[in-house]
Image (tube, rainbow, N blue to C red; front, side, top):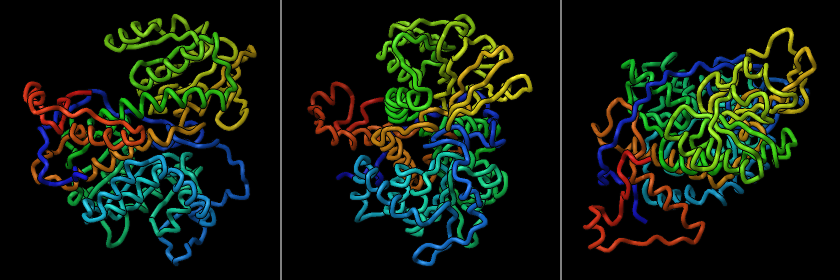
Length: 496
């Protein structure tokens, strides 16, 4: 197999994309956190403390695995066997990462890399963590979300002496303590950062800026983290190159679209027991996430309205058969409001004051600021907790709305997402780390870059084997006519 991480591979100059939007100020509702990313996605269960006997903080417990290692902090090391089975099941679906492991048996493209990460800690991300180790890296990890960690998976990693600091239901103080334990280590300094939401990068800038002297690059997966990086870049404070994985073609066209198309229905069923046929739904935002949600709901017989600020996306919505409208024009009549924008205050108190009784309000965007949940915490409104991830907000006249996952991203807070789609994103992250770590000096400046298109195409090609799919190859004459290499890339660097 051709090694795409070879230093001899020449990539076309990458287009740098800058975003004029400022970093969003995240807010946490019940957990009172200032973190952008620690509450806004990927929880496999409820936010309730449903097991009082387990309320003792892991920070207060003496922990050791069977090998005598204490370099971790998790909920319960006894869950390791269960977690290992979950990781092995995920490996069966994440064929591309397993192919990378096999390809790296002779050469370790991340040998010498010391990666500090802040992402979700689940069976799927564990396959990524362990792949990075097989590729030669040393890693330390914390969770980017206080509710997303699968404790059994964290236990399985800890049992293998993987330094992981994460458990489900962390407090705000726990969250930052775990991040600090990954960074503030005597005799170990990171030279790569893998982030999901920008909290690890933010913490290092805030507490340990001297560490950036050795950091070769940052790989960021989320829109929230990308906004933070662009903000640093515009302020002239981004002192290392960064790769924007969120806007890579493979992330946008597969994870954001297909993942949300499949998981939105399951999430709504599990939380609100909704029947979709005939329901009127507003989907706020028609990016890849909005497209996936709208298509799924339309296929189930829902009447779908779309709101958009971008005339191009708006035109796409119209040509896909959706009614383009403003939220305020239909908010009184709809049965569901779903945000998919990544923005803040998309649904505000003024909207919710007008909603019909029983209207379901939820978020599928990356940021937990899309629904102004804080505006609902006023004396005249009663919060009635129904079950995990479901709250009724009751107005003085008895009218109520159904708020799901406290405004955090629904599919990852209340359900699961297809492992296969996560494999695409995880493979993209791994290759981005390899690219930055092995890039010759001068290839990347102190800016934010998209993943080289050659690697984007390689990620896709690795996943074709699952479908027993076979690519057509260009002839020499065809390649010359099109002005392409027979081996790609087949799209320009700016293609999205």
